[in-house]
Image (tube, rainbow, N blue to C red; front, side, top):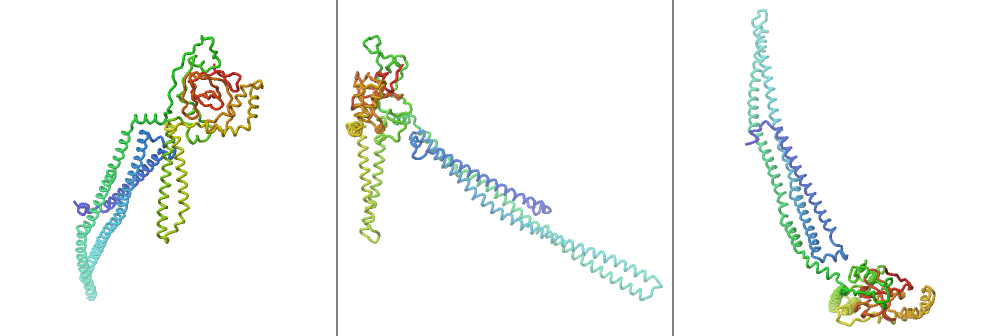
Length: 556
């Protein structure tokens, strides 16, 4: 099966077919190029998607990734990033192994095709030229034969005419012979040209054209093989990344299987556990006893009697994690005393660990500079040893400061964990606050008198003024506030151990002053004497508000 023998007369058809083959190859190149662009765009979108859902550094969102479910999600994001990398590999390999190679091959194919069909046209032109020569010699032979016949007829006519001179007859005879000779010469030339044409035509259709068409056939078959190999490469490029993609998917599955709901639940406990005990049972209040003071309008226990009481202690506060935090303040106290015990312990431990890491960094820098200084001392040409003394001094000072900070936080941590007796913050600040307020004692008393509805000054108000002067500020956030006036009294229903800073221990049955009502967070601020005030759980006390006191409210 050869195009040279089977398609010897289909030169134009083969020219169109081979051009169509090149168009198909270029179309396939464009298809692969579009696929590579899609893969690249897909990879870019996957990377952006992974980046979009990555936790922001040094943010609360990053802390949430300690749970197994969120860690599995983070692993999924990372694996999707690797998955995107494999799509980029597909795009790169298609560009280099298919698009680049086929583009160069198409250029070579066009040049080869052009050369073969140029040779074919040249052969056709040669045959056509030979045919024209044959036709010319044939026409000349035909013309010479006709002229020879006319010359012979004219001679015979002249020879038969008795009136024609002998000289004219001889002349006609010579002309007839000349024409016969020309006809013979034309015949011989025509015969030679015919033989030459037949030979050239035979060579054209049985040698030249078959060879040219065979080369064109081979060229076209190479094109077909090449596009088939490219399609195979197209599939192999995808197949090569399947193991890695499968590994990415396996890692995602592994991360999903690592989700531990029990461990996550335990981490929630560790994250939000306050360390407090829930309140005890509420005692029955016997209103049939006439000696007991009526509390229908002045006690918080009314709401309990009406069936509307809901335990607040230990419940979720309105926007607060601890009753001593004020929203309008800045950062919390340095010792995290505004947090519940368990959370405070974790924060202090975290701070100690961070400081120890900082100390180690400074020590590493100091050691490195010390070695450099020793090298400078042994080899002065390498540098001045005195040039690092200033930096070494700074590092020593930084290390000492950090160690003092560690000791400070470890002391607070020891207090929280019960390894050391808790030191009263009130005792530390009492003398300083007294000195700061001693000069304004008279003004405070005057303000207290003005705050009374009838403008009178009572001994009780004088006592409150003294309590204002000597009251301690249990938290840094209240250093700049005026001591609060009493708005009522309360009775401790249960004993409460105020082990945390800002709280006050009370004994069952103890009578205390109320200076700030429950703001919805389950805590009431009370004052025992001139030197001690703080918070106690609202559910542990029975409150009697004074209607005439400033800021007092009546509970119905």
